[in-house]
Amino acid sequence: MKKATFAAGCFWGVEDVFSGIKGVLSTAVGYTGGTTENPTYEEICTGKTGHAEAVEVAFDPDIVTYQDLLAVFWSIHDPTTPDRQGPDVGTQYRSAVFIHDAKQGTLARVSRGELAESGRFRNPIVTEILPAPQFYRAEEYHQGYIGKRRAHLR
Image (cartoon, rainbow, N blue to C red; front, side, top):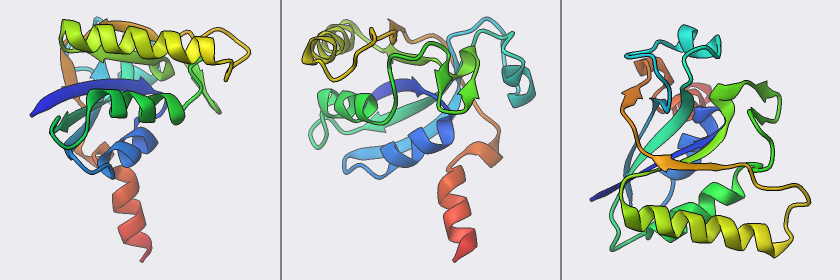
């Protein structure tokens, strides 16, 4: 099992996408990249913690590669908008790849460079690629939020 951590706006939708990928063993939503220890959702919403809403993905690299996960990451958000995804605005919604080892760092930088060169976006890619700091699991009501809502509506 390997870990990958991505920030691409509101973590509910990001988690929902990654949780549906074959080879993803589990997902968790939480906060990372900031300075506040054990932050709450209310603290994150102030934008003062420095944390991003993120998804930690546990995956089986024999079934799904890190490159595959990066391709999904790039496809589900706009990596050219600093501190914003759609209507969500603030540093907690920034685009970031939090790497767990040197190989992930190399693969993330290469894929970001290829995307930048592809011409898919007119504006520069602002996605940060940083070592994965402490990941603080979000409150339980945030875990699998979209899946829970979907089940509730049935």
